[in-house]
Structure formats: C-alpha cells, structure tokens
Image 1 (cartoon, one colour):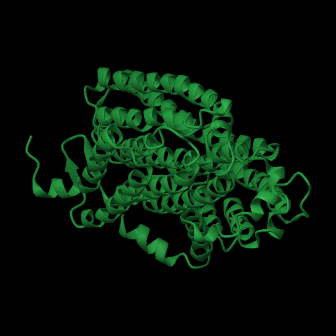
Image 2 (cartoon, rainbow, N blue to C red; image 1 turned 180 degrees about the vertical axis):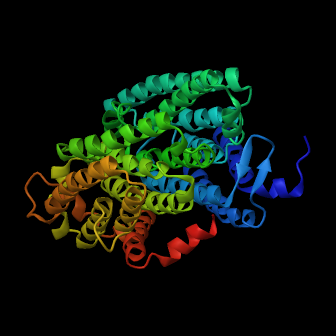
Image 3 (cartoon, rainbow, N blue to C red; image 1 turned 90 degrees about the horizontal axis):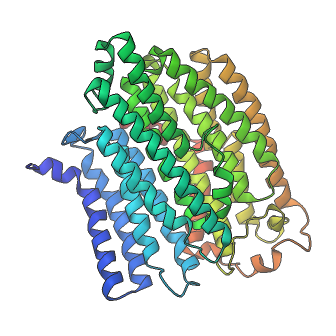
Length: 486
C-alpha cells in the first residue's frame, strides 16, 4: 500500500501523537522524568491540534477503506484533543503526591485519545471495533490510577467487566451484519440494505441494534446506565474530565456519520428504539440527579440526561441533517466546557488530599471565600440547565426547534419535564454555594488556594467558564465555524 502526500498530511495529527507515544515509552524505560513527559504530552497535543488546520484544504479524504476524514470530523477531533489537554493539565499537580508510576498516566491518556480520534474518522466496522477497544482499554488503568482509594479499584473492575460485555455485543452485531450483507463499510451499508429481501433486512437490522446497544453502554444511556454513578464516584476527578467527554464525542460523531446515510426516519424500529432511550434517559437522569449528595454521582446522572438530549438530534429527516449537525456541535462544545470546569474545580481542591473533595456539603459557602470561582461554577450550572445568555440555552433551543419541526411531541414532553427537573438539581448546587458556610464545609482548605487563577488548571477553568457566557451572548462566531465544516 502506497500513501501519497495528501494522505500523509491527513495523517499528520495522528502521527504526531503516535511519535509522542513512542518517546514516552522510551523515556519511561530509560529515564523517568514526570515534568518532561507531562510537558511533552501537552505540547504534542497542542501541536496535533494546530496541525488539524492543514487538513482543512484536503478534506474530504479517504485513508484506505478504513478511515474517512471530513471537516466535520476535524471539529470533533479538536474537542477530543482539548479534553485530553485539560486532563493532562489537571493531572500534573494531582500526580505529584504519587511516589511511583506517574508517567504512565500520560501514556494511557495518549493511547486512549488516539483510539477516540480513530473512532471519529472510522469508515469500516473493523476500524470501528479496533478504535473502540483502543479508546476503552487504557481507561481501565486511568480509572484505577488512584489505587489508594477502594472505590477506584472497584470502579475499574466494574467498567472492565461491563465493557467486555459491551464489546461482545459490538462483535456480535458486526458479525451478523457481515454474514448477511457481505460488507462492513459504513458508507455502503444503506445502499446494500435497500437491495436485501425483507427477511435479510430484519437480520441486518438485528446486527445494527446490537452495535447500537454497545454504543448506548458507552454513552451510559437508559437501560445501559447502571454502572454510571458508581464509576463516576470511583474515578479520579482529573480522569473524569477526559472519560466523560472524549468517548462520548467520538461515539456520537460516528452515530451522526452513520445515520447521515442510514436515515432513522426511514426505519420505524430504529426510530422507536432511539426515541424510547432518549425519552427515559432524559427523565431518569434528571430525576436521579436530584437525590445525590456526591457531586461526581450527581454529574454521572446528569450526563445520562445530557446525552439523552443529544440523542434527539439523530431523530431527524435527511432534510434536517444540516441543522442537526450544527446543533450537535453547539451542544457538544457546551458539554466539553462544562465538564472541564466542574471536574477541574473538584481536582483543584483535591490535589492536596488522598481523596476527591466531592461532597456537595463541603462546598457550602464557596462564594464567600472564592467569589470568582463560585461565579464561574454558577455559569456552568446555569448553562447545563439551559438558562438564557449561556451556550447551554442556545444548544437546548436548537434541540427544541428540532422537536417542533419533526413533531416529536412525546420527546418534547420529556424534554420540558427533564429540563425542569434538571434546573431544580442545578439550582440546589448553586444555592448551596451562596449559603453561609458551615463548620463541615471545606472553607479552611479553600482559603489556601487563593492563587488558583495563576495556575494552568485555574486558567483553563476560567477560559472554559467565560466561553460559555461569551458564546451564549454572541454565538455567531461559533455558528459560522460549525457551518464552515459542513
């Protein structure tokens, strides 16, 4: 196989990360240096992010039959890399308290990032499966990295077992599709599907449903959500900023790509399954979040409802596809920024402890000690709730427009009820920060971090929070950017 110059340029962001993986492995083998590896990893991620600019002029382009790069996939790759950068920035001060094996954290993050990126551009079931595994396997190690906490080991083991079951469904679905259609190309599947007999269509449809079930597990959708809260609680906060974002962006991008050719509207079975899962995910996620006292469990359930909203975007006709891609980009950017902020804040206060400061009651009265930080967290929570002048409002408004245009009245009812329930949960966290601090709150330790804004983590938190406000007030630059990648 000969790769031409254009294909080599298209592979540049991935080659940069692959080269970094090799250097990190060699550095770990010969001379461990935590600062050097952390610095190298962050710089390589930034260079890889910048190198995506050179792809704009040559896409769409196929890299063999396995990968297909478009402008839209460049947008999602950018979000994944930004999530990885945030994780490495948050992890550096957190890892300083560990005497051994600090450097492997960055290696696992890079490998998982590569898997998520390859999944985003997959055009074949074989590359799709390998990418999912490449993304998932390092996460087992990242979840268990805080091995002094029993919850981390428990969470890693649970995710390992359940992820194995998910992979089994994925392989079963792929093999079933291939047995009937004789083709594993995502691009050709719709054309092949239309040429099959009714009985063959039902069997291929069964394979597609198996693949979707595997993806719904990764997205923690109802009824594949049972692992979510426990694993969120046991996962270190610095890992959650990556775990909760990168995989979901990658999987949603591949679902959006697949359903751009295989329209949900044309198949009542797929449409019904997606509608039911979206309906129950929105209601269940928001309802369960209300009763949580642990912040990480709260956002675990909140993520179920957020992805439930996102799933509505797939329930459109082909005529609405352009608008659904635009809405997906806005909503995912909001999801990325909010995850960076609230897991970054938990990480900021947990660096000096052997455990995460993740109880809601510990943050009571945060505003009276750190007014700027509390204000940024308030913006994030209001954005998740969909309050005006935040980016979250604009994203939810676009989703509501999709509901109206496509007459999805049942989903619309769950959307409105879920939004009200979600607002109650988010306002509960906001009010808690503005109450007078109690003796049990984490005020004494928070006072020691007066210069949080001068740290790389603090700068990242500040920029992400302010972006939600700026793009909520003036979203035109974001809309123009997303329109340019269509």
